Structures are given as C-alpha cells and as structure tokens.
Image (tube, rainbow, N blue to C red; front, top):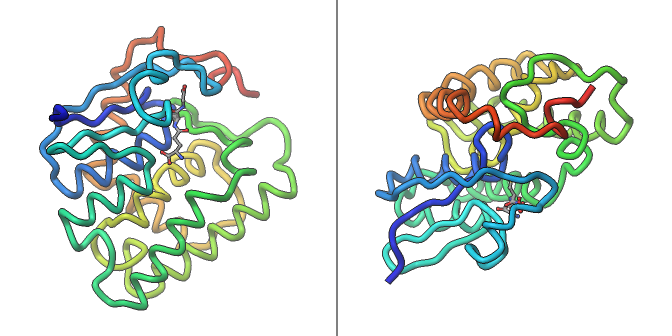
Length: 219
Ligand SMILES: N[C@@H](CCC(=O)N[C@@H](CS)C(=O)NCC(=O)O)C(=O)O
C-alpha cells in the first residue's frame, strides 16, 4: 500500500509540480508534500528511481500511484467534480485547452523558464515562435474569462487554470508583451489566489543553494 504523498520539485522552478500541486490542493487530497531539489535539465538523480517516469509531480494516494500532471488533474477531478466544468461543452473546452497546454507551447516553455525569483524581461527580443505561443495563450485566456471569469471556466480555479498557472508566473516574471486586458485581469486572479500565494511564499523560503545558475543567470 502506497504512502499518501505528493512529490514535487523545487517550487521556484518546477512548473509541472505547480500544476499537480494545485490540482491536489483543490481536490483537498490529504497527502504529505515532499520537495526534491531539481538538478536542472532533467538530471535529478533522486527522481529516476522514485516515480515511473523519473519526473515530478508524482502522487501516491490510497493505493493509487499517479504520475504526469494531466493524469493527476484527472485523478483529482474524481475527488472534486468541480475541477472540470459541469456543462458538457464547457468541459470539452477546458479539457482541450488543458491538453493543448500539456502537449504544446514549447517555445514559451523553453524561452521563458519558470523562475519565481525573476522580475525582468529577457535582454533579447522574443523570437517569432514565442510570440506565436503568447498570442495563442492570450486568445485562450481571453475566450475563457469572457464567459464570466475571473478564472477560465467560471468563478473558481479548476484544472484548466492549474495547467496555465505556471504560464501566468512566467508572463509576470518576464513581463511579456501583447496581452489583452482580460488576460492581465486573469493573471492577477491566478497570482493572488490563496494557493498561489502559498506556493510563492514556500518558494521564497527554499534554501539558496537550491538555486541553479542556468535559470538565475538567464540574461
Ligand atoms: N509530462 C510531465 C512532465 C514532468 C516534468 O518534466 N517534470 C520535471 C520537473 S518540472 C522533472 O521531473 N524533470 C526531471 C528531472 O529534473 O530529473 C508532467 O506533465 O508531469
């Protein structure tokens, strides 16, 4: 029988961990949270024998073993049905944008790594493919919040928001251009959600020697 725990990586950097952690907390699963400092570039030795895919987030809950953030989101929705919209068409949209985030936006993910301690734009102009990703994300956020907000599918944070939360962190850190006023309002709603405040506060308390030059020294 598995111990009930959620294993995550360095909170300052681990965008996939943030997604899984938000889903677990929104579903109110009673698990211990264990933080493993990441080595960067997928080289964290401690993870290779820990989870089936050698990555975090990784969840053990009441005998179930769950890995990969999207799978964790689905598992959590079995415990809190409101993590996906109750309306069928809205649920289809939410699942689609969550999957699009999970499998795409590689340009944004690689050019703008999550670093909660960063608060300045990149020195170099953003590449064309990064602008393209930003435009698509802006369209998703504008459409989603356009149906009521402040979150993508209504008044409460759900799985789709969890998938985009690290993108909010990145866009705020790097002050990305080209976002609608609806997207700016969405970013503020996500950033100031109590769970996000908790995550940022925990990240700020992490040991300084967990910080990685590859992220801290990005020009
Ligand atoms: N598709 C996976 C990606 C998970 C992932 O890449 N996590 C990173 C941390 S953000 C990781 O564990 N990297 C392995 C390592 O650092 O060794 C998911 O959605 O959970």
